Image (cartoon, rainbow, N blue to C red; front, side):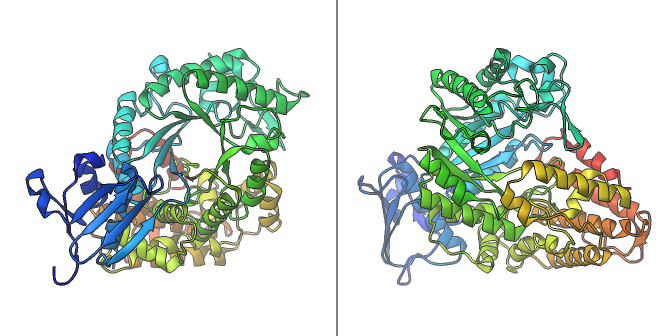
Length: 616
């Protein structure tokens, strides 16, 4: 061995480890030479289940010729192999010595929104699960609202959707378990019920039948009437369709943002009591089915329900996605109330096209800090799809790495430069070492915009609101301000004042130029990951879309949205001459359609591209 161990290290996996060879091949590619049973003696790695390490922990003893792994459970042995793979990915030969490691939080989860347009294909979900295992996550949730799951009892509501089927969920559940990841069912069960309440047969279950008005604008009905016994009956019929697909003992029922409570049938009532009554009824039915209930914590704070009597085993999920979210204050409140809880930061990729890097880093740091201080039981990183899920998946990879490493070891310091290097090493395998920084830099264009918004960019707001002239731009911003006034916490409102709504072409053009420079830089990258060509195309398309809406916003100020401008082709190849807005957008849309269908089912694609083509 030339005086030390080098990768690939010869590895025989004894059956008693509980680790499958194909899982090691998928999660730790390149680091190990897997040996058959008749070559067991050639192994350089030896496993010792001594029961002395903490759950999921391990101890590595590395010398010149072999590695001894000491562990107490199969997950610990698996994470030891992942740690060795990380050394391999960073091109660091195993250094002689003894090291022990264990996670700071027993639960480290990732939640993917599959209910706002994008429903991933099996291959995409398996790709993501392997990535999560590589970053030592041990929980995964698919956020379900509306009809993104093919409920067997409600075939009439999803027959035209590209819903996830029970068979697909069962396969994914088994795939996750082999990688020491718990697939937890996640189904909203009070608010966010708009697709159901829009149907005639369920409309009477709404808290506000026909929708409700607030602050000068009208919203459709989104919240069930919690005191109508038919509401809970509907939710449990949905639940009983979903539960058999999962082996997890947990069930995430949502219950966030029940906007209408207090404005409809519950007006004038004690909303804390109304809300807690529904929570307790739902908990009782889930407990009878052997499931621990998980729920978002925002309504608990809103209705002053944290001190009210609720079942002790409910696991509350404290979410907040702005860098200013008061995790410290909220977590202290939950701890003082004796609640079990996770912290839930976000990827900051939704409503942006390319992410908001600094917001993501600070948001995760604040969540992890509060979790450590106040004894959270876990961390759940959330990746939402608001605005028809227009962001490409690779723009969320940096947050998955960052949160995974911080949740495993809260003392780990990861600079932005280090994170870029890890993206290149762990994901893109970019031999130029440039792609990681390009991805993170793409999440900076919002800093050049004339107005900062919480968890969204001005470019995306123009797209999502269908803004086509200066008057509608100003109206859209006023509406955004009203929504912030209703939904945002005081700390968030104070951090994002919407006083000067002046559109500044100079800022918008600077943001577009910045993005187009990054897209040019992508042509210099050399990703060797299996989907490297696809990843680069996704990044190019996302950056092109953000740049388009920056330039479009600049033209709004002059009332010239049909004017021409100099722009490189949306495919990333340099183009000569002047391209009209319509031609540039059509190229972006064609590429977006093609890329969508590679990773996702086709349902939802039409809505997103129709939203784009409003601007041609």
